[in-house]
Structure formats: structure tokens, C-alpha cells
Image (cartoon, rainbow, N blue to C red; front, side, top):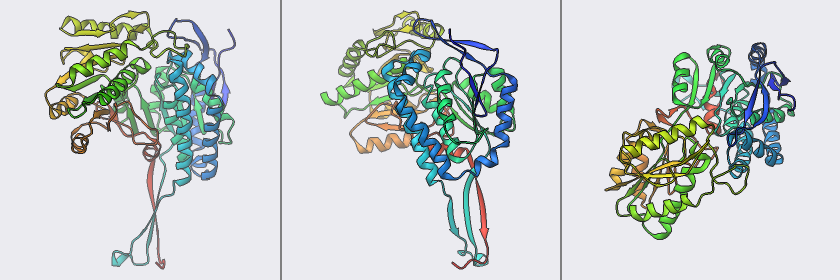
Length: 480
């Protein structure tokens, strides 16, 4: 085994005696060892971020943009090796890892573009007689250093969504990657180290939960951006209520296939998208398809198509380029999915395809007749399981989509413009995707949820807004 991978504290590599293994979820073999940050290096990272906050905020736009552009280019140059590394640590099938690296590159490119446009507003104030000769200038300035906490399921692009907008606005960032998937984030640190960003502007620190809790409480990190489970996210919010928070939490994403979507072409498209994005990432995505409501007149035809397509998906070693669905992150996660499906079946659900576990891999599964109080229906399954349900009308379907404590995104398959706008108005979610599944996301668009799915928005410009606050200057005796 080679030397344990270093972490990055205040932009420089460092090592500690606290070494942990990174294992491949598919077969459990050790693929790397990583140093977890020492308490001294965590403190050094936070102190450096706090000390350089003014310098970071004053960096010219071209310097920030150049650094972001550099990372974007280097990600594309190293796509193959970073994707392979991501597959080894996360179990993400290689075909999906190969797609994630260019997405992350695009996220950094979007951030570079926004850094160049981040200019503020000019407002004339002489609309009021007492303000004649006055001009207002408003700009957004960083709130201070950002603490980014990321999950295992997108170990590069969700890291990019913390780091890139922080650097774009001139805010130092301290990143805590997921314990199971630190390697990709540490590789990103290598690319950041090639830029001219000042010391203290960024750190990438694998760490313990206790160390992370200390950073959540640390007043020198006034902004926290967290993606992960709701239980942890709301605990973070409660523990530091005066901090600026962006919380991207869980979901139970729903699809409605409306009564007008009944041609063979329509049903084939809907079935393809539902099967693919119910099972991609082994269902380990907050916006993977979980609940599917189908107009009753279309239900038999759509259910048959979904089952056919799910049955055709390849499971196996995620390093194999032909694998569509790989393992869950660990055996405990696969056992939980297995248990939830068995409980649903015991309560009357029917397995149309799948329903079997092999160590960390759970077969892509489609269920029907699932009681609505079953965990696999009501909670976030975070596994390759889709539940099909017929509905008597589109209106009933919209109500059923809303009947959840989650609200991240929903998909509505319809050609009817009135139905589309009714869904946009009625659905209690952060995003409504018309003509597709809820799994669609583009990285420069507002993204976030309501209810138990979180608070705040990502998407580069939205995150930049969350990381900053308005500052106003008034000029007096100005000729307008």
C-alpha cells in the first residue's frame, strides 16, 4: 500500500497519523488510505480562512475567474482518471462517473462566468425630492468563510457546488468531504493548488464528525452549505441558528404521467426516463425517481414498459463500462433497502421485477400495490426502487405528489400547457420538470427544496447570493 493520501490545509498538503481506509463498495477491497486532518491542521485551516477573508473579497474578478477556469480545464483533461477514482471509492458505475466529471467542469466554468458578471446595481435616488443629487450603489459582499459539507453520492459535482460559488464571490472555503468518498475531493485540491489563489482561500479536510461539529459552531465560519440527510441537516440548523445556511436534504421524488401522454412514443419516452433515473446511481440521488403516479387509462401499458426496461439494466462491477446499476455505498444501506421492500411486500405490495440483494448490490426493483404508509413509499428509499400507482385523474395525481413531507423536484409528463402551469402552481416542490423525470438538473439553474427537503438554493448564482450580503453606498451631490 502506498503512502496515505494527504489532505489540504490552507492550500498546502499535510498528513497526520490518523489514517483510514477507503474501500470499494462493490467488493470491499481497500483502494486507498487517507489521512484525516489533525485538530491542529483543522484549526490552521480555519484561522487561515478567517485571516485571508478581506484579501479574498478584494481579489479582482479576473483572478477569481482565471482560477475557476483553470480547474474547469484540468478536470476535462483528467476526466478518465478522476472518473475511475470516483468509481472505486463510491461504487458509481463508470459510465455515470464519466458524465459527472464534465458536469463538474461545467460548474466551475459557470462560476468563472458569474465571477466576471458579479457587479451590483446602480439606483438613482432623486425619485424622492429630499434625495435630489443622490445615487445609490448596491453590491453583494462575502459574508465570510464558507464551511462546505458534502455527501458520498456525487463526490465531485456536489463538492464543486460548494467550492466554485465561494471562490467566485471571493469567500474562503473549508471543505469536509464525505468520509467514504474523500479521494475525488482531494484530487480537486491538487487542481486548486495549481492556481494563484492566496494561502488560506481553500482547504479540503477529511475529518471526524466531532471535528465537523466544532466547525459548525465556529463563528469564524459564518456560512454553512450542507448536502446530506435531513436528520443531520436540521440538527446543523438548530445548533447554529444565527449562521447563514444552505441545506440540500433528502427527497422522495415523484413523477406524474398525465392522461394526455398516451401515444406509444410518449409511453416509450416516459418508461425509458423512469427506468433509467429510478435506478441510476443505484437510486442514491435525492432526485432519483421513487414514486410514479400514472393516469389509470395508461397504467397497464406504462407499467409493462417500465418493467421491461428495468429488467434490461445491467448490474455488476461498476468499473465495467457496460454496468448500468452498481452497488449501494455499503452493505448496511443495501440491507435497509431489502428490509423496506420485504416490509412492503408483507403489507400487500407486489414485486414486478427485482427484489433481490447480493451483498451491497440490490437488484433494480419495481413495486405496485404499495401501502402509502410503507417506508419504501413514504420515506426516501435512496436505493434502486420505484413504486408505481394508478390515479383516476391528473388533479388527483398532483395531490398525491404533494402528499409527502418532502419537496425537492417533481416530473410531469404532459403535452397540455394548462396542465403544465397548473402543476407549476400547485406542486409543493422546489422544481417542476415538464416532459421529463425530476432527476433533471442543470448546474446554473436554481436548485433546492421545500418542506423536509431543505432550505436555500444552489445553482451557481443562487449559491453566490446565499454566500453574500448586500452593502449599500450613497453618493451625494451627484449630477444625474
